[in-house]
Length: 354
Ligand SMILES: Cc1cc2nc3c(=O)[nH]c(=O)nc-3n(C[C@H](O)[C@H](O)[C@H](O)COP(=O)(O)O)c2cc1C
Image (cartoon, rainbow, N blue to C red):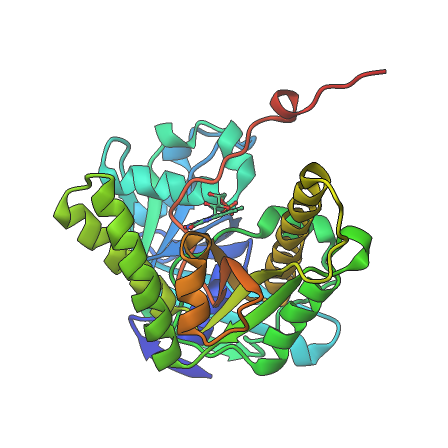
């Protein structure tokens, strides 16, 4: 058993962020206990729980858990993994003080966005009309194999829907075998004529990342200034991008490699050949993002190298035949990402033709 006051360790936070359900324990003023399963999100060191309208007998504000919190804000929440292989068992329990965030406030809006980002089901529910439970941790206890990714065989669809772009990472190293497994997933992407017209560069060392950030930053600064952006906005955006490159424990740069493509006498077909290579690079990137998620990692996509391929080749001393296209950041999410990630309904995207 490990106890830490107030803050979750990177291992505890990484475990908590990946769980889809937890059990919330509250007690009334007399100490009578009450526990319920809850969907939750974790961000900025706080745990957020929606009061939704799944079928229940009473309106959200009259729920026993809410009444208990108002009488007695001390709560505990536990997220656990069970598996028949007991070497995989693990839990994180957080004790803390709970309060309600009322609709209308900025914190409430951010919490709703966070929850909808994690659970697509909330997009269909009017959770924004109800208060949100917010728990500030005071004591954290954990046990077991926190670092193991899975407790059951996940499906590809779980990964497709669960994956999300992560832009802030915990200071927690990614084991080399996991990085290799992600690269392996890229290797198996479909490609035109099986040519695999891409190469991957892995960057972990701090000074190399510094060099890359500086090279891309300069080019971006020039572009933003050309667009007439205000100096403080230019500075903020550059700082954000630099932070992402330095915070993520691993960067994977996906480059096009066109030397093995078929050669055509006409420009039109040659262009299509290159387009196919780019499409295939996208498939390799998605393979890697899904594999990362499946392995218990998180990832983000940065398009910056596309805008300054020569600078990136130089900064990383790459073969001149490589054309940098996409940069994937890899690591463990610091919290559930705040950005809303809704999707258009299928009806907007698909036409059926008999
Ligand atoms: C080609 C491509 C380029 C992207 N470039 C960036 C980028 O430069 N910075 C960024 O934060 N996200 C970037 N993204 C991630 C998208 O913003 C993200 O996938 C989208 O908002 C949906 O969110 P989700 O991935 O969490 O579902 C990129 C995604 C793609 C496919």
